[in-house]
Image 1 (spheres, helix red, strand yellow):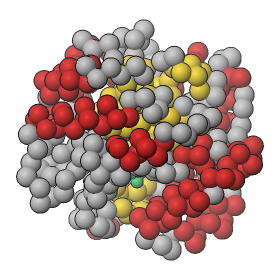
Image 2 (cartoon, rainbow, N blue to C red):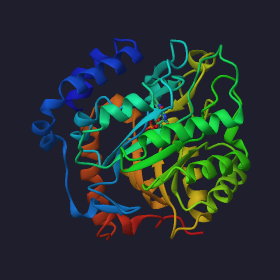
Image 3 (tube, protein in one colour):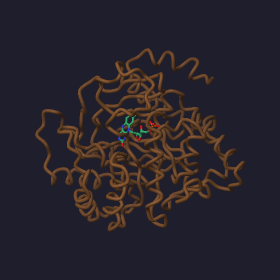
Length: 365
Ligand SMILES: Cc1cc2nc3c(=O)[nH]c(=O)nc-3n(C[C@H](O)[C@H](O)[C@H](O)COP(=O)(O)O)c2cc1C
């Protein structure tokens, strides 16, 4: 049992999940000065973990998923936790308060959370200003989403939705090393999924093609809709050189893999993160890898990664990088080093000299 699980988690879990989340971001922000001194304790380096994806160099394939540091307030400390990359956001063109509270719940029996934040963030202008002079030792991804104006606001028109992405992309395109477009939950006002069809994705990518984005762009898409949805996203992306790859987002439904009794969660809105979402995410990675142009696209695999075996599974299915969030809530930041150390051992045991060689090795179509 780690020090975090034994001592910190019991205290942290006495607090409301969102309060604990905010407090951890504040702490990371306030202790940023200590990051260089702490980094050696959290880092694990091994040649086999180094990888190049979309022209970017990563010291290891394990990144922090979007949603933990929504407005880029804690990146200096988070970069010291041994991650190979950080993804911040989702950031929208305008600041947003997100959904009404409560909007985050823990499901300890499943080591999961239910998330219904509704994309609160400080807005693209503030985030761009905040990160202007920040130099990090790892690649930074910035996840963009359409502004959530709240339940009371009139539904946005299609043009307004696209214009929102364009505005935030203009403001943040040169801030990080890659962008990811959260195309899977931008319409919290009406529940309408704007990007469920191919045409809106095409229109959005058309508009973004004129913004002058130089960095790789990943599309973070819904894991629902099966093979037809995956093929639709690929068809939409195919005409746009700016798209470099894909990530699957959480599904806004409760998976049937939950062991927490239904009375606990059946009236809670939102998506389930952590191990219960892993089977669907892995199935999506597998099908996408089989269908995508592998010379052109890369997959970042997220959803339920909490061990080296789970990270390796996603890599073998076709993910070039993986991300986690919920496992850090349950296991603390030391989880990143533990995963990387064990992943290096697993790669060696299978005869791989580098993680890149293992990508897709367990996914023969
Ligand atoms: C508290 C929380 C907030 C999240 N917020 C966002 C977000 O703002 N944008 C986004 O694209 N994904 C968001 N996600 C999804 C994560 O980026 C990730 O895809 C998902 O949680 C699966 O990884 P995990 O099982 O390791 O948590 C959030 C997840 C959690 C748990």
